[in-house]
Image 1: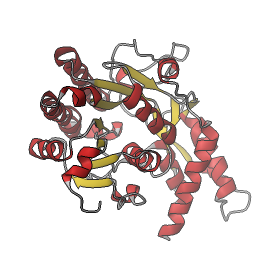
Image 2 (image 1 turned 30 degrees about the vertical axis):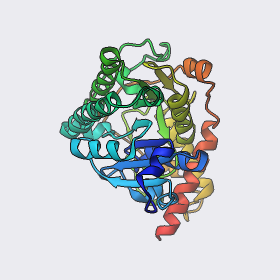
Image 3 (image 1 turned 90 degrees about the vertical axis):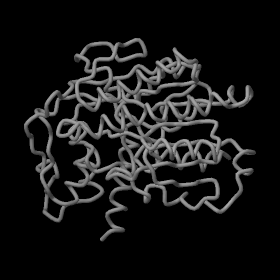
Length: 349
């Protein structure tokens, strides 16, 4: 961001985004810079899943300020709040990969629970000292996941805001813990919050450990595509651009203390997703082998521990209260995602 005085920030609405160089956070940052006139402070630790390349196109915009740092760093958080005086704090910062949480849960506890608690404490202290008018405009938004609710049976009703938490993995347990802390700050202190729980996201620049980019990457490299168990697990898929639009609407219009579930209305089996990707890649990135389909690369592997069978979200509340619904049909979003990854691959060749 170009050099500017503190007065500039005080005259404008400022958003503090944590984890804004990660997958969903970076799309939100780009959405805000392109669609609004707000100033944005982007705090990211830049772990393996965060990358400044994700925000290249807005990095030097005079309304975007990037700060490398950890939400567990109380001194840094207090400095940012005092200097930039945000009206919104939107917490994307999290360790998110289930497999990694099974191998080593410590980073998930540190970031998702302790880090969120630190951010809440600093934010509440900052909010306590705002004048009455600025207090009314302030909000803390926690970005969470549908995995906190556990799993659904095949014909069971979709998750809604009334479902009880029943996490299955260290990852989802850590996110559930963070959500409970956020909600407790509202109930105890009247601290203004919203929580959003989303279904599986997909889209451009997602980290290659996730199912869709992993499958695309394996095809490009002509390597086996690993599919857990029999691939019958069901997920509800949400295009990331739809998700970030919903988040901003909740930030502006969400009733204080409320939780909103954000889903894509696209329930599909994992194996169906993988096969659809292989078919599209046959079209957009055909093999040099004659009459060869990338479906031949599919390889079923041992299922992971505590693998939830099905997630699905009922988004009626956010649709009726905030007038949001997903715009992208799954196949259209998937085509856009595949073409982005293919273009990215060509750039690196």
